[in-house]
Image 1 (cartoon, rainbow, N blue to C red):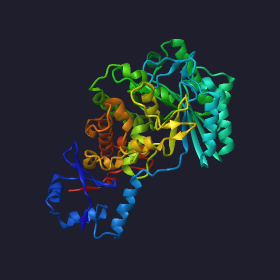
Image 2: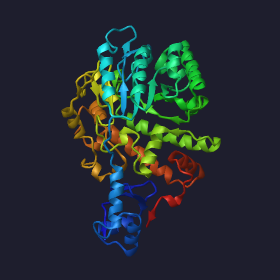
Image 3: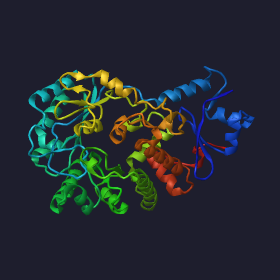
Image 4: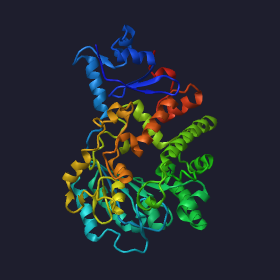
Length: 469
């Protein structure tokens, strides 16, 4: 019998988490680790490993084939381009102090698509294969150029049998034309809600009446479009976090049950903030506390709010094929199924790459909308966008569930060859997956109910975590 390579990590209660390259996992003892390391597995050990898919008798047998299938399902498959992030304008009618895109003032010139750029975008759309497409309008504030949004949507609807549109807007200024654009079955709204009135004012609007307008328009958006058509994301200052209860109350008040906590990004104007070397530890603790808070609140209220990214990591840990979030893809190849078109027609592999290029940190553009994608630059980025062979990742128990973020490495460290364990991305995701394991291992009913809801399964119990002494 051959055992697939196993990786392990100490858990808080003295046991060990073991995983294999296909994402199979179990909780075991130090005694088992000693037997495994000394090639002294007992018949019971061997039976357990065979039953749970960690071993095979010979190459090509059903156990071997099962492992190969599960491993391949863990690898993100390259797909046809079907998702565009479009930035018709970089101008904005707010001046958030931690703006990550380095927006331009509303009155500025030269930060909108030209007629030539619009035509090139439509031509680009016309050449895409389809049959489905998703378009996300970013900014700046894209509704400042609702005319451009209308032209893109009209052309896309005529070209693709199935299309979906997301408008990322601050909801500050909406007239009849803007509401008419948003109030369509195929169009969704994404906005930012940083907590209560005071927190949102401090971090975004800097004016109480402007914040009043935002909350009024948010309520109107939920009323007109329905809560399922409106999402809101809070950006948290780890030094001045909002009260958890106030934060969740504000989201639930608007019918929003999924909250994506985001730290202030190290991009755009936000880079001017003093960098705290301990910020990742503070963020990890804040995030962990929020998960504990949600578990308790959900059990008390019987209303199941989730933290979006924790839910993504949980589902990624429990099953293969959960590649919805690009940070958790591996390989995380660029310019495959999505691409970004900036206000000047430049193409970027991600929105963060656009932000990084905007401040002159490094040029990560990969072509223009008129000339197409520069595959040479894409291949260069893709060469570092896989964790299977990274010197640190190959030994990490969470490697099968994790991804890569070359752009974040460049932003924070100015290089991509730093030891993976020293990067913000790694420190954040080690903490996240540690929290996933801790939460699914709890024996209290409150945790089990939230895990089941977040994992999208009927129930959760101890029997779902393989154990071996």
